[in-house]
Length: 531
Image 1: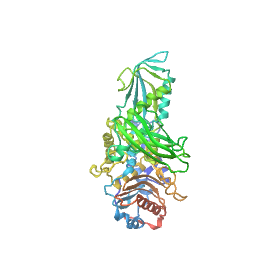
Image 2 (image 1 turned 90 degrees about the horizontal axis):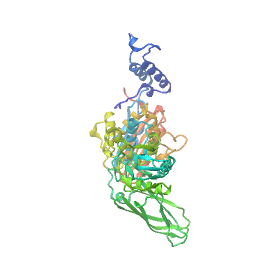
Image 3 (image 1 turned 120 degrees about the horizontal axis):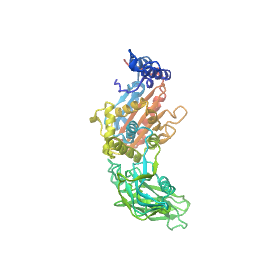
Image 4 (image 1 turned 90 degrees about the vertical axis):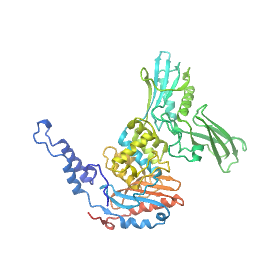
């Protein structure tokens, strides 16, 4: 059976007792056993490197790896395995050794399980405390009357969490800094990232036209996940018009049209939305009817141009808060010299952003993080550059470049291909990463508790034992992550199902049976593998 490459110290490869001992042993070895006050230059006989100590601990502490063929093998008799294309690999996290596989080297669509790979690369390259900044620069003098004799610049770095409340506070903070009027122009700088209309790699015609929330525009200046909420509520008279409005004002960029009527109480809610795009602008038209006893409802659609949306919302916010702008709202980059930061908004740390990304499978956040990887590592905030960073990470795990095909960071593409063995390699690597492994595992949905797994793997003997990432497209349903089995071991797994000829419920049931089999696993039922 193949052994996956590990890059972990002994302290991550041992049970609780040995973990504590291993940390102490390696720490002492790293210190070189040099008495306090004595430098290495004065020590005529330096001690051995810590590698031998660590290796002894591993050899003595790691139990033999067990094969799960006889308990998981029967699962492959399900018709799912003949009706669909299935790839499944299970790996012992402690040792990195494969304990079961079926089509583990099949190149399949991973759907949103791709986010688990993007997140791993992001944590390794950017670190868990990395944050996004949105800055307001001034180029000119702010006098005692609150008038800026010059221009204002808004510069974004792709914060995927920046919402309308943050924009309100940014304008309010400008007023707290004494700004009352801008005599010049306000420029919007999104040069940190290349703009994208929609997620690269997804060309479904209906989504290109209608702009569902999972298919957003991307850019360095983004707001509200680059979606708009159209609010509809019944009017006062049956047969009369319903009330339709935008939650976030963006004059000149977004508008609504409505033929939505108010129906009698108790009737069925029937609301239809059509989006039409013209350049950077969009119109959202609602038709149908709302029962008079219905409450207000939000309907979300993406915006066609991120920067235009941000600019229009900022202009509207300035007007609402009484901040006068004598000039125009224009595109432009912050000058190389002479300008200074007046106000800055900083996002939550990356570790928390990735938790939202993975637990709720947010495409927008995954793609913004990918473009940030490109900007920070390759010097270009593009999807292409971000993909190169993720490719480099997979190659560093010993995976040949020709085995996979990456398109974006969210998995929203039919052209993206990964093998189950690639996903488990990432999972094992992150499980043994002492710097960011904890944050990575915390970003995954917890079975029976939260995220996309909140309703699955419930019960006192199930909940909390799976941490994973789901992935779904039409005809595709995948699950990857970690599972704490009944034999006390923790396994990394990737279970990808493609070419489903029927409902994804069949694949989900197969995933659940797989997990339940491991939950019910007992030590005596498995046979030790040959050394």
